[in-house]
Length: 218
Image (cartoon, rainbow, N blue to C red; front, side, top):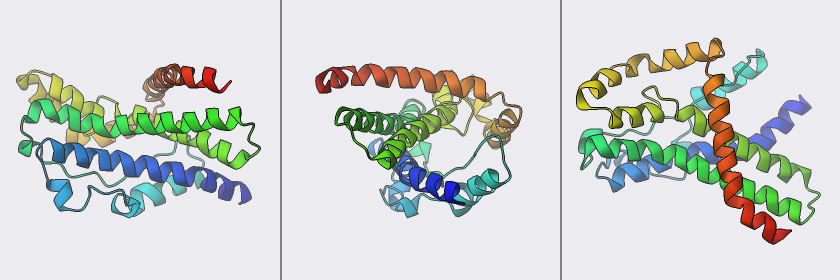
């Protein structure tokens, strides 16, 4: 029980930030490109309560943890976007979709900067170091997962936006089955072959960005 409480304490803040800013970024991007649906429903907010789904964000991950599942899966309340309201729906769909994962990439960068700063000042606060490491991992996981190219995930929206109209329409018809496709790939441990390379590539990119800061603080 103590281990569970410690894990919860370390991951709680990074997960709340990761989910909240991911969904809020979608809402901000949608409004910028012309769709006010999320804004009108109060979802263009940094209030975590607006985005947390009691079942998907809390219950499912906790149950999977206690049953010893090989993976933890959860989700927030999707931000409602009416792509037809965008000024250029097909093109700007990709920008709205990318806003969420890019927010996670920026958060991973911020947590990584915190790790470097803590190291530079020889901080003895193990809790904050573990939280920063959890922040990097959490955001990289959410980034890679959401970029998987199957609708309704963000990566699927990006692919739909890039395909010619004829093929985009057919590809978008996968959306009702996308959730089940992803679950099947998780159970078959196939999703791992997407997640790890994308996470490693994203982390390598972030490490490249913070290299100047590392030299400066050393």
